[in-house]
Image 1 (cartoon, rainbow, N blue to C red):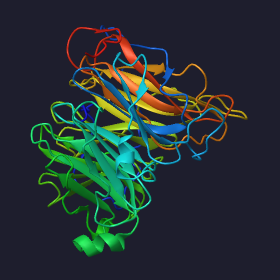
Image 2: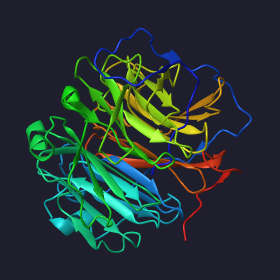
Image 3: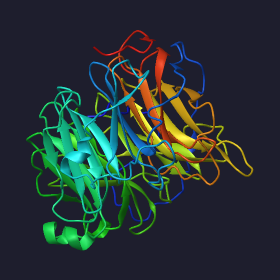
Amino acid sequence: MRLGGVAFVALAMVSAGCVAGLAAEDPARELEGQTTEERQDPVFSDPIVVDDERDLTEPAVEVDSEGRVYVAGIPGVTGSVSDGQEDTTGASQIFGSLDGGQSFELIDPLPSGLYGASFGGGDVDLALGSADEVYMTDLWAGNAGFVASGDHGETWPTSTPAIFTFPGIDRQWIDTHADTGAIYVSAQSLSTGAVREVANTDSNLVLAKSEDGGETFSVERPIGTEERNLISPSGPLVVNEARDEIAIPYSTSSGGQGVAVSVTPDEGDTWEHTSIPGIDEQTTVFPVIADDNAGNLYLVTTLDDRIVLSTSGDGGRTWTTPEVVDPDPGEEQIIPWVVAGDAGELAVSWREASTEGDPQRWDYELATITNGLSSDPSVTVHQLNDEPIDEGDYSLREVNELAIGPDGAVHAAWPSLPADGEDTVTQYARQIDGAPLAGDGSVEGFAPSP
């Protein structure tokens, strides 16, 4: 599971219902109580480039129980390679850090290469098992592949070139159940006809499961019904271990634009679908969802060029009216992510156009939120980059992720296009001081792993 969100502010709840007909009668409101709390505000490290030899973007990040940090990325925006860079036009790359995130090394042999040198490089996602197994799924032209390592990336004995039984897969996500060891992968099919042949439905979201560490995956379960078949795109799935359920967020154009969440208590046999109130537009790319240690859910998305957050205390059946995370935004905010630990402790990140003009300046922002269950939460906004992550029309693609380490520290990875405009790199920063999102005490330094 990903350390996830908690119920945020007690606002009006909306009962489960279909996506069609979302109304904007209750627009997003700014978070109240932007005050300094007694807990020490987090301090973040200076950003570093994970690897300056490869053109990589759309990073995924995970931190295991001993503090090892993993960052994976896909080939850059165009797949091009400039002088001095290695050719990464094929599979995605994964990097590891044993010093708490101060430096990274390429994990080689590349796991994606185990199932074909030309495979991979489309979309990548990471997950960890209960014994710190590393799981990676990598999208290629026909399907999504999977690899697994039980020794922190030294070897990759498990390799599955095609998780799904039909081609045309896009934007796959992975999560695990720590108690059962099950691995779940969701994806969007580019052909509802292909899904119909498997599951007799026109839904274009599907869920696959592995109970043997990724050696095999089950036949896909469709997410949704024929009435909800225009689901695109989907955000990361969450295995909500506290409730033993799975939740998946997505944008929809079925009967009207909006954002919704589908929840299954039985691994995909049945689904409950709920619209997020007050949203009558699709998000910028996809919404993102996270769960907390008590089973509450957070969802972040875009609304009117701002990042908003909605929460659920009943596993995703009802949701609060979205609230704006940062009350003083720049010109545009896009590409959000959310992660949280203990009740009311969370972090939300996004990319922001901070000035007008030509070219625009883009920055990477992160808000840490404490007392999120109260009516008076404390919100502190951090800019993690020093130089602009882009200047121009912004072409850094769709993903920047957050994770929480065993000490409760926040870890962040995001794409950046330096001033020379040639090579997309992945940058990384982490919390090195202040109150953790999970656990007691204070985060202290980089906390290197064994």
